[in-house]
Length: 248
Length: 316
Ligand SMILES: Cc1cc2nc3c(=O)[nH]c(=O)nc-3n(C[C@H](O)[C@H](O)[C@H](O)COP(=O)(O)OP(=O)(O)OC[C@H]3O[C@@H](n4cnc5c(N)ncnc54)[C@H](O)[C@@H]3O)c2cc1C
Ligand SMILES: Nc1ncnc2c1ncn2[C@@H]1O[C@H](COP(=O)(O)O)[C@@H](O)[C@H]1O
Image (cartoon, rainbow over all chains, first blue to last red; front, side, top):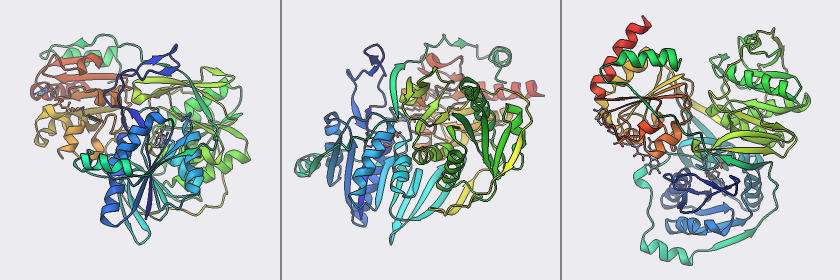
């Protein structure tokens, strides 16, 4: 089985978000970049398949060399080969088109992306990729087993879960729940050494065009100070929620 | 340049979020000087969309009865192309986020998710949308002729119009499905995090699952959904799908009540777009108070039952 895991490279979850150049660029100063947490759940499941039923696991990123350390980390925790498509990740549509062009030339049985990236948050790439490749897609995927070319997957829905079945190849959008958090791996010395020997290929861009352009950014307006209500005056809280906030 | 609104249903009736997406679509059409129509699958009450200004809705009844993103996207795309709709408006529910990217590819359209407002400019179309898990907004310009717009929950609001809405049955062939549905488990009769107007959420400060009756009782009087912080679901006190935050479900309600939750940046990121936040915490230094509108510094085990009791009296 051949598995492709799409990796986005995002600011660490504790990062304060700031912009530069008159609010037109994300300010990377002092920001630590990590594997998008949803992608890490997906990668961990891919490595589980590799160890349990045998699979080749490739990781891929569309973007600049800034993400190379993130891809090396994926190799160190068990992926077999890394690709980077050398194109600026301008929008979800361009990224999905670059990935689709690549995937068409390689026979993958399973393509794993994250539910959404925690930076641009489109939840766009995996669905678009599935449509471009005409493959079934399971978003919000919290369970996946594969048996004889058939995938059984579980999708989280509003208020519950749905079990789905499809023939491979499929695309999934991974999220928390797909693997246990305790199964996530931290690269060890051996993994890091091995990663240096593993293939890492830079692929030229197909020149996919973006359909949207983020022209500027804005931070939410600062919040007014909290109104504190004494614990022995709950009536006042109800009054404020009713008359001032008008939410009850 | 006309506008098509995709309306979702639950048990064959329009979902609550139909009111907001319909209102948005009608306002967008007015701004673009064009008309707005809707499309809905298997609904028994589509004509009620007139309440929000929709004058015509296409009713599809020959598609899979459960939501099937691939099949539905194909039908909506075909309908949009045939009738020259260039802007398709959808909600931000889990199903809409499933449908939208597939639909955008079929329409060769731009997809702008998490939109919080009408376009800032119309030439070119430019939308304000939430990004960086609500830590910031982006202004996204549309470079394509067609677009799919995902409206962020509770961002635009509902505009009552009271028009008469004609229902036009459609007759498209049902596309084959790519995914076989094996089963579905869904809670019924209680509010879900995505749909609820109010969410009551508990954190590690509640000490253990045996104390969740406090959260449930408060949610019950408010008709609210219950949620929790990440460690609470990690420890198995509550099920995974109640976990909210940056790596859990997003919460975008009118009222979010956080009990015994410290307000870590990853938690706040996922709930910050809720309109009004009430925090109950016994530590006056808890970071959540900085992000809250109303706060009670006190022991949850005393404050919450009192609040529940007082709300019961208030509602009575
Ligand atoms: C990659 C990553 C992703 C994450 N994603 C998320 C996410 O999506 N969602 C999320 O929630 N977290 C997330 N976290 C975890 C987050 O950093 C915090 O650890 C978590 O939100 C803390 O949960 P808590 O507030 O319930 O617990 P604690 O931080 O332990 O806070 C408990 C609070 O309860 C208060 N308290 C104690 N006793 C009482 C009492 N009797 N009455 C009233 N108050 C009381 C305390 O003062 C304290 O403020 C993530 C972390 C990482 C590293
Ligand atoms: N530049 C990229 N390169 C490779 N994969 C990506 C990239 N951007 C997004 N993805 C994948 O698509 C998922 C959803 O991202 P998004 O559509 O940005 O929310 C991510 O979790 C990744 O798996």
